[in-house]
Length: 200
Image 1 (spheres, rainbow, N blue to C red):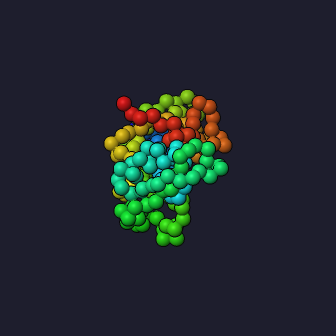
Image 2: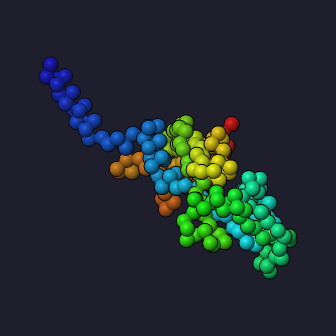
Image 3: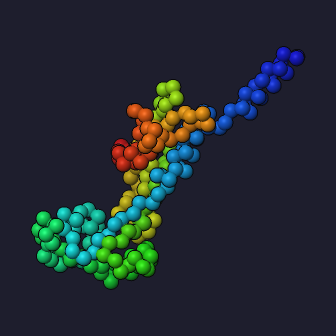
C-alpha cells in the first residue's frame, strides 16, 4: 500500500512539474499559431488611384474592382518611371467612394494610395506534427475570412490553404521558430503563410 502511495505521489509531482507547453500537441500548436502576430495580422489591399501602369490596372485585384463598379479609368501619359504603356488615370466611382469611405480613416481618404483591411486568417485545423528531437514541423490548414464587401470580392472564404511551420522546444516549452533562430528545415510562420499552397 505504501509503495502505491509513493508512486502516486511521484506521478503527481511529475505532472505538476511539467508545463502544458512541454508536449507539442495539436491543441498547443493550434493555440500558438492562432495567437501569433503573423497569423492575426489582417490582410490589407493597397489601392492606388491617379496614374498607374497598365500592369497594375489589369491585375486580378483591379479587374475585380472594375467589375464591381468601384473604379474607372481613362488613358493617361506614362511618367518616365513607368516603362509599360499605356498608363491609366484611376478614379473611384461614386459607388467606390461610398464603399471605401467606411473602410479607411478619414485622413487617408484624400491620398492617392491607401490601405484597405480586407480579410483575416482563420485556422481550420492542424493536420499533422512531425518531430525530430527538439524540432518539429507542424502542418496546418487555414482560410481567409473577408472583413467587408471589398474583402468578399477579393478573397473567397471557401478556398483553404496548406502551410507548414517550424517549432522548436526551448527550456520553457515549444515555440514557433522566428527568423533569427529558424533552424533548417523548419520555416517561420511568415514564410509558411507566404508559401501556402491551395488545399486539394
